[in-house]
Structures are given as structure tokens and as C-alpha cells.
Amino acid sequence: MRPFSMQLDFRKGELAPRDRTNIRKLSDMKGMFLDAEAERLILEKENPVIYSFYERLLPEENGHLQLATTTIHPGKIGDEYFMTKGHYHKRSATSEVYLGLAGQGCLLTQTVGGDFESMVIKPGVLAYIPPYWGHRMVNTGSTPFVFFAVYPGDAGHNYGDIESTGFVKILVERDGKPLFIDNPRWKKLG
Amino acid sequence: MRPFSMQLDFRKGELAPRDRTNIRKLSDMKGMFLDAEAERLILEKENPVIYSFYERLLPEENGHLQLATTTIHPGKIGDEYFMTKGHYHKRSATSEVYLGLAGQGCLLTQTVGGDFESMVIKPGVLAYIPPYWGHRMVNTGSTPFVFFAVYPGDAGHNYGDIESTGFVKILVERDGKPLFIDNPRWKKLG
Image 1 (tube, rainbow over the protein chains, first blue to last red):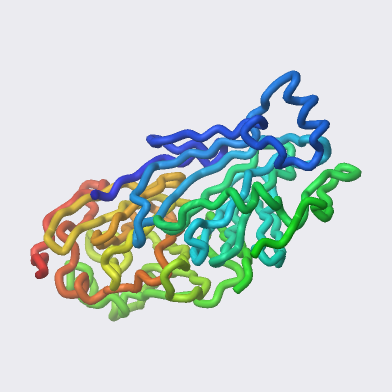
Image 2: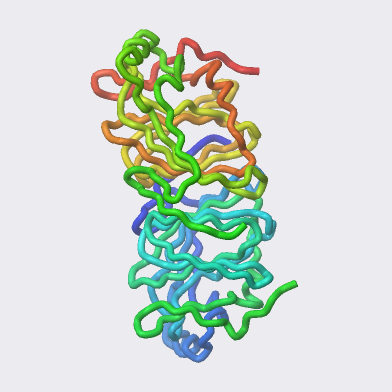
């Protein structure tokens, strides 16, 4: 394998050339937002894109790295901000690095035991997610929230544990500002 | 270990908070530039900073990642542009990702067998250096060249092989423009 380069658009998050564009619409995230009635009403009329991510496919091997750029659109389902599905790594003892590029959001991280930590992400904020911490990004702004991610080549994704429990906290808008509330569906795993 | 965030200044390359600031002055790179007489004359008068890099110390373990930001100052020794020492990884089967943030430069990559590849790095250019490829960055512009790097936690650095052979090609300024010339001191390893 030879070295190569790509162009990353900091404003739009697009990678060129890329191998794969992944689009996550509301219908792909059914049941992940708390307000099921708001979700149902929106899906009757439209199926909004919640986020897109761009990947260059690299070997899923130890020693390699994976890289991706993500754009979360601004918006809410009920009063809950648009967000990524969130995941642990399949090989759970692996880290991830996030770098904020445009817009403003919040990184939610947690362990399967319910330890929770959040941080505000803006352009130039670099976040380190150590092994064993699940992670989700949330767009708390009114413009696209764009960030860059790097993680080990053999990390893999475990979406299932988040699908079954959600995150410890949920980020909603109250009086025009982000507010954390407890997730009534959260439960400890293992 | 818990998640944490830092602020990365895209223009200056500074990380805050950071654990370590590394300064590489010309005296730290003796013999790495081709023009020994130009090096001697400069060192008689001053000892310029060639580049600085900022690190947050993370476990040197598989599954973790290392991250660093680097600023190469503009300048030349003789007609050879300021550059990093360059290195292979100690665990050679590991990759690295570079993201250009400010200024303009060139990434030089090579294998120990002498396979060579270069690419222009500007803000938004994302370069992937696969396992086994040594890498050096060069500032070909007139302003600080700033970039962000991520690599596996257990990659380590092997500077010695580059110190003994240099890179296959050398980047010099001719008629105001960058030009590659063969490195007369290059030799294959192994």
C-alpha cells in the first residue's frame, strides 16, 4: 500500500476522493430519540437526513488507522438535538480522536457501567476518547456541525449496546439552551 | 483514564493544555541538511528554531492513539527548506495520519528500500502514511507550516535510520520554486 492524500472541506466535512458516503436519515435511527410521537409525526411528512459521514476505506487491521469526517445537520426531534447513533468499539480497548472543524456541538461519552462525561466541541477542540468509552456527537447549534475522527484500524463498531440502552443523558433544548436530562431508558450493561 | 479535550490553535499549532513542547533548533539537526558550510555559517551567528511540536502524553500502548501538532518555521539552510528530522516508526507496521492546518509544505515518504512518494500539503489536505513508510514534512512556503498528526499509541519513533541515510530526495529552492534533487548521501538499508 502506498501513501495517498485527500482534500477535506472543513466547512462541509466532505472528503475527496472518498470511497463511501454514509447517510443516516431519521428512519435509520428509529427509537433512538426519546420523543416517539414527535418522530412519528415528522416521518409522516418527511425523512430528514440527521447526519452524513465520509470514509476512505482502509484495512481493518492493527497498525492501520481509520479516518472519517462527519456532518450533523442542525435540527431537533421534539426537543432533542440531532445526533449520531453513537457506539462503543467492537474491540473495546481502543481509543478515538475527534477534532471539531465547523459549527458547535457536544460530545457525550460513557462506559457500559454508566460513568458519564461530556464536553463542548467547537472548531479547534480536540477530544481524546480513551479505551472502553462509548461516544456520540450532538449538534447543539443552528449550522452544520462538522468534525474529523481517527481511530485504530481494527477498532470496529458496536452499535448494538447503544441501541439497547441509549446514553446515560439526553441533550435537549430548553429555553433556547442545551440542557442534559436523565435518559429514562438507560440501563447498565454487564 | 477519562475522556478529555484540548484546544488546538489552527494558525499557530499550539495545544492547550499540553504536557510537552519540543523545540528543534538547527543544532539539534546537525548534518541533516545537505549544505554543511551554510549550516556552519548560520550556527556561528545564531541557532534558529527549525520546528516545534506540542504533545499531550498518552499511554504508549496498543489501542491508544498519539496526537501531536507541529509548526515548521519558514526558512532555508543554503537552498534546502526547513524540515522535520523525519522518522520511521519503531514498530514499523504502523500508520500515521497528517492534516494540514496552515501554511504550505510537502510530505516526503519513503521505504527503507528506496521507494519514494511526495505530496503537497495545504490546509485541509489529509495524508495517509501506511505501515513501513518513513515520513518527513518540509515547509516550502514563506509562513509557518502547521499540521496535526495522529498515530497508534505503540508506534514509537525510529530516527536513527533517517539520520544515517537521509531521504531519497531533497527539497531545495531554485528560481524561487521548490525542486526535488537526488540526495547524494542516500543509501538503501537492509
